Length: 328
Image 1 (cartoon, rainbow, N blue to C red):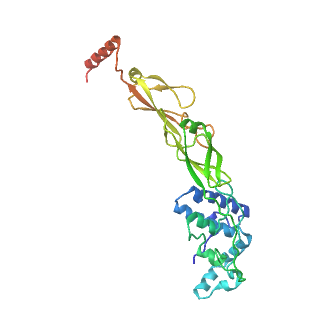
Image 2 (tube, rainbow, N blue to C red):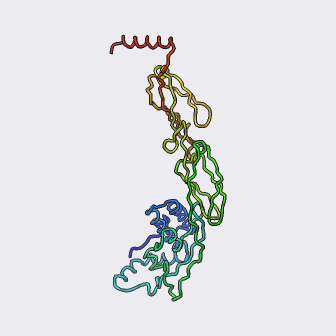
Image 3 (cartoon, one colour):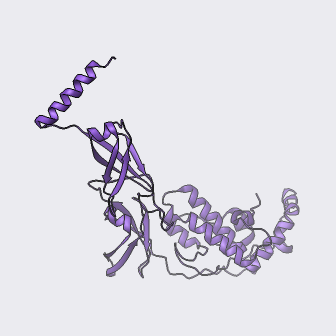
C-alpha cells in the first residue's frame, strides 16, 4: 500500500498551523470544487484527495496519529511484507473512527470536508471519497472502531444541488455592469433573486446568486450588437467607413465608441480597405482591474462613391489620365 502524503496534497509544510492548513484546503477546494468544474474528472479526483487530506490534518487527533504513522511507515511496510499486521497493536491499532471536520459553506464561501453521503449525491451511487490508505488507518467510510462499537455517522441535511440558468444581457450591460431581478419557480414556490453582473464580464462566464434554496449560477450570454463585436477577453471590434481621398492622402476620422464620446483617429496615407487601427484603452473593462480596458480594433471600410457630381467626375477623369501618363 502506498503512503499518502497529505501535507503535499494540501501544499503545506509539516509544521503548518491549523489555520494554515484550513486556508490551504479552502483555497484548493474552491479551485477544484465539482460545482465549478462540471464533468471534469481530473478536478473530481483532486477534490477527493483534498477532502481526504483535510479529513485527517484538520482533526488534531487524526493528525497526531498520522504524523506518528509517517515516522514509522518503513517499519509498517517491513512488518506487512513479513506477514504481520502492525495495526493490531501499537500506535496504528484498529483504524481510527472518522469524526466530522469543521463546518463550512458552499462554493464562494467557506469550504469543509464532504461526507460520503454528499459524495454520492455529487458523483452518483457507489462513489467513494476515501482511499484504501485512509480506510486502513483512519476507518474511512464504515471503518471499524477499535472498541468494537458501531461507527458514528454524521446526520446532515442533504445539500441542495446547485442550479444553473442562462441569462442574456446586452453588450452595453456587460460593459458597464448591471443587475437583474429574476424570479425562479420550484417545488417550494417562487423565489426572487437579484443577479449582479460586474463590468467587463465575458460571454459564457458564470455568476453566483446565493439563496435559501441553494446556490444558483447564471451563465451570461451577451446578445449580438449592431456595430460592435467582442474580440478576445477584453477587446472590441468595429468597422468605420473611410472616404477614398482620406485613405489615399491620410487624415483623421471620427469613431463612435460603444460608451462615451467620439474618438478622433489618424488614418495613414495609402490605407487599404480592411486595414485595422488599434485604439488602445478604448475596449471593454478588464474584470477585476479597475480603470483598465482592452483595445478598440477599427477596421477601415473604404467607401467607393456610386454617384458623382459633374465636378467630381472631372477630377476623377483627370486623375485617371495622370495615372495613364505615369510609366509603369
